[in-house]
Length: 354
Image 1 (cartoon, rainbow, N blue to C red):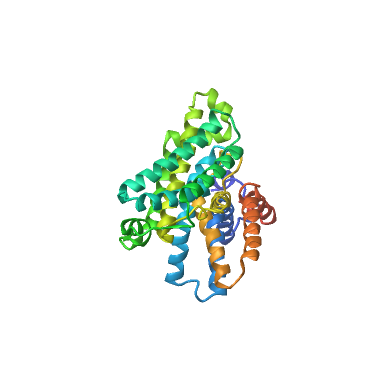
Image 2 (image 1 turned 60 degrees about the horizontal axis):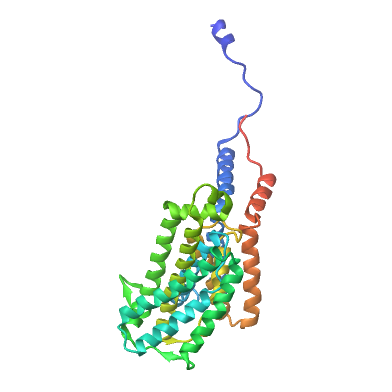
């Protein structure tokens, strides 16, 4: 008996951690690890809570439908913008291309073109605008900011010339139903369109060679070129996709407003860029997620909706919107989330078992 007892290892004098402290430590560690991934959802939920507190009309079905429907245009634009920003570029022409889409839609329908053919023709025209952007950036080596700024001006002028009047009314019921009033399984068509676009974009970004190559191009274009990736081709395709999605967003806008006008797209390009940045993408390229861009759209759209409900005028709205964008960029691109996580890790270190 004595030999058995003497062979046992000596017990440590340090007290073992209690089960409750071990559980709280694990929960704290899990929260700190999840914070960089979930802060966008937390921000959106906080904004929704504020909206519920300040207005009784906020959490109503009608208001929620209005917010989601209004966001559908910017979501489609933002996803096209996301792919461009992922490569380290930027597309300032999407607002003007959207406006051109509404004008061409109205003109072709007015001329008697069938609605389906009009949609195809509009998307082709917008794809050509995006293609020209890609050619300017890749073949002529013009910086994306300058190339797309020039395209923004050219497309806006072209839309104004072919419009010739203040606005052109759209009365075609097929267009209105397909891109605005219609629904499928209880989901409004604009919402269904942006859901499909977002899901396809997420699958392309994560599971296709093309999507993964865009991350590589944004991270280091020269290394991507030396490794054999078709950098020029993929950049041209990316800008073309942005043009097509701007055209699709224009179809939604034209059907909702029931008119074509060269003035419709003013400011949409900035909303799309802001949403992508709020969603965590880096303007330097190589970082981002299309679904986060969608959340970014809803963060901005919900804030604007709340300010409209409480009667805040447009000028203070711009100030508040700018502050939100700065905060979002700090959290996503400036390492703010990591700084906050590090701060709490130092203040509340995890208890380690002896």
